Image (tube, rainbow, N blue to C red; front, side, top):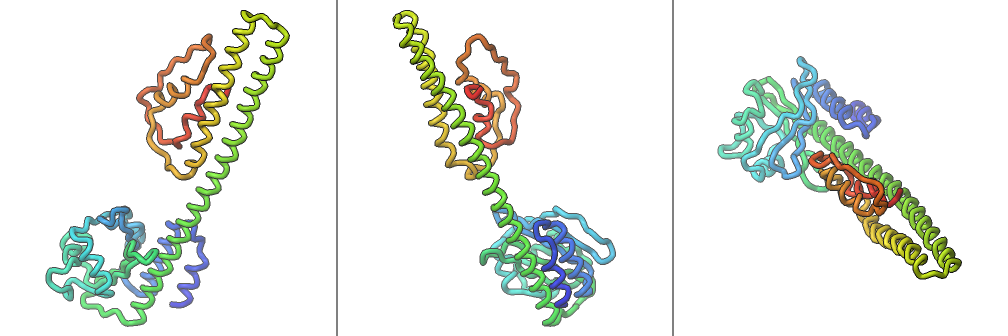
Length: 289
């Protein structure tokens, strides 16, 4: 059993599907049971979702099955109360009975072993071993091995979640650097427009001629103001998740900053919904071009 656990710790924990496959296969082989599976609670802790299921005779079982728990509180208490249980040894009225009655556990399962998967001190799922043999008694060594499998599964999930966060942080830093470079470039361009027109105004001297120059300067300063205001969004990079947005509305907002009247924009994108970063508007901001 220890060699099996050592093999699991050497797996690439960034691939959860491969890990779930291996850990359930090990459970079936080492415990000589008929089926093993990994179930995780949904974010609301109202349902259990099958992440992977492996059967000794059938191989990979159907994943993504779901069970709605009528009284999740009782079931969670049951996970603490029972480590091994079968349909015949559950106390009357216990929430585990609802699981048998719901079809989550097929009628041909005679004995099973449920081990909680704890993450951050809270139960986030269940590692299940199921046997078709009636009245099988799981010995202490088998129970300890199942607990070890559940603990290793916890480590794999925690590692996967941590690497996701680290990847998101790296991605956020890349976006911050990109936005800083774009904004700095845009502001420098507008400052060049302002200084150039100020020099030109000095040479002309005429009020009538300078009115057009002052208008260009005003437009340039407004663009700089808009770009500086946008930097307030930098603090939200990596904080806000992607969201569904109307592409046409985002284009309209971006086009509002476009001041060249001789360019006509036809927006046929309204009603097209995309799942994108809240900074999508910046990408489409015509004032940058």
